[in-house]
Structure formats: structure tokens, C-alpha cells
Image 1 (tube, rainbow, N blue to C red):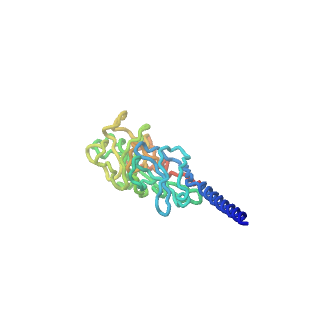
Image 2 (cartoon, one colour):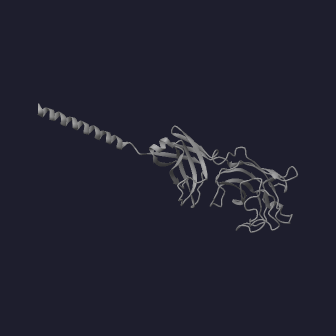
Length: 295
């Protein structure tokens, strides 16, 4: 009888040990990371100094999902499962390639809330909503005293009432962004300067190397292309036939080219008159969007 009891006790211990081992094995097989898949449209390469970085918002705090430079999608990132399942929002920011700050930069470009496993993300709520943006400009060169080259300057103002008024109706931008005007001559975009307020002069009003020597021009964004032309170009020029563009740029920005977001654009008619208000049209890209899936 004693031998039988000992045998039963050994069997019982073995069962407990086996059960514990099975539980441990099951626990160990639970993945600690899951996939986060990005499918984004309209992003452009940032250059060597900056990268895109994804973030999930968990209990109100941002957690990085990784950085990337390629704008070919889909892209998959391995993220802690518990954190990913608890995330309420996905945010995409633009960060310095060498970055000692663990927090997201002010330059956030996409965001969207998760509904189940999917977050539809776009730039409207986090950069600005440009769907109702309008613009107007004139051809004139107010920074010199020569009235024979008036078609060589563009100024974003409306003088149809007989006096200069703001020519651009644009939303206030989120932190980390600025507007920039462009004249595309042939295939080459030449900046008119960056600005935040369409009712004030742009940032390079007093320092532009292109403007004339008789002043800084009116208190609105714009540029006179009168001297110091880039290689391969001649100033003064004729902007008739060129394309005028308003873009939305990261700030700071290391690229000399227009960024993806271009809410307003217009090809200057070849018959355009100088000192006459010309209306702009909708630009090629006024929103960036995509989807983010957690698996």
C-alpha cells in the first residue's frame, strides 16, 4: 500500500510539472512584437538630413515605431504588441537624421485614430486644411525704377479694388511648417521666399539676391527676378508661361525644391497683363493620406 501511495504521488508531481511546463511553453510562444504596416501616398524623399518617424500614442504618450527614408510602400515595422494594441492614434513626423531628442518634432505631417486594426491618416488635421484655399497675384517689379521689365516679378496681392490687398487665403499652419512661393521657369522652380502670414512680407523681403536695389517691395509675399540669376538663366525674365506655385514646407527645410504639399498653382497666361490681378487655381497636392494597419 505504501508503494502504491508513493507511485501515485510521483505521478501527481509529474502531472503538475508537465502542466507547468506546458503553461510556460504557451506563455513563451505568445509574440512580444506585432507588425505595423504603413501604406502612405504622396510622400517625397527628404534628403540626407531628415527622416520620417512613426509614432503611436499610448495613454497620451508618443512611442516611436521607427524611422524610414524610402517612400516606397507598404512598409512594415515590428512594434511591442501590448503597446500597439493599446495605441489610440498614429502620427508621422519629420525628424533630423541625427536626433538626440526622444520626443516627436513639431513637424508632424500625418495623423489618424485607430478604429480596430486600422487608422486612416491624412495631413488635413495636423498640417492644415487647404480645401478652401484661394490665391491671386500680379506681375510687377516694384523693387527697381525700370518700368520695362514688369513681367519679371510676381507678388501675391490683389489690386482689383484699386489698392493692394492680401492675395492669398490660406489656413494658419501648425507648428513646424511654412508657406513658400515659387515661379517654375522651364523645369526649374525658383523660390519667392517663405512666409507664415499672407498679409505680410515674406522672410527674405530685405535679403533677396534677386530683387532690385530700389526697395523691398510691397508688404506681401513675392519676388522680383531682376539680377543674380541662377546658372543657365537670365534675369530680368518673362514669367508669362511660367507656373506660379504655393507650397507648404517643413521648417527647418534642407531641400531647395518644393515639398509635396502644393495647395495652389497657376500657369501665367502668355497674354497676361502686368499690374493686373490674376486668380490662382487648385494645386496638384492639397492633402497627403494613407492607412496604417496593426496586425
